[in-house]
Length: 207
Image (cartoon, rainbow, N blue to C red; front, side, top):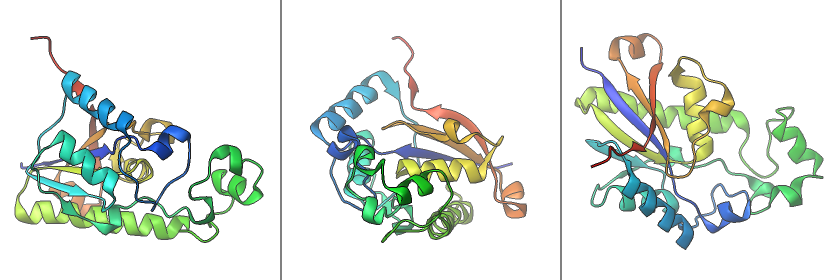
């Protein structure tokens, strides 16, 4: 039976990531250190292939694919963008730690981000984008794809779609890393779930 591998890959590091600042829709490129870290990871680790490539529209994701998969010509999917952090955008945890609204959001007591995207809107957008990608792959018969997106998007997708079910802490992807899911059409069409296979990339075998 034909199955489909989907590799969820988090973008490399930006200056905001280095400074511990929240960025969602802010369109920052990779930092010099982030670019160097990706190149070093590519040197020591092996990344999976793909017949199709999909990316968030934000620069940090598109650059990550250019570094790891030169010439891959990714398809841009708006629904793969990171959450819009509204009034929390471009602020650090240090700046937000005394903001009651932020604390309630972090603890799951309030799904609304002031001036930003609420939890349900974010979830619906990301799920629609991912399910459309999977259905497109099945329809077209492309059995392997790479999706370059954001940490929050990957965490959500792994929690909602992966089997076995994972704890939130086990769904966190480091920069330039991620997870592989395997979709079996007969299961997917009955209930949208996918088998969690491995963490990517993996260490290269000594030559």
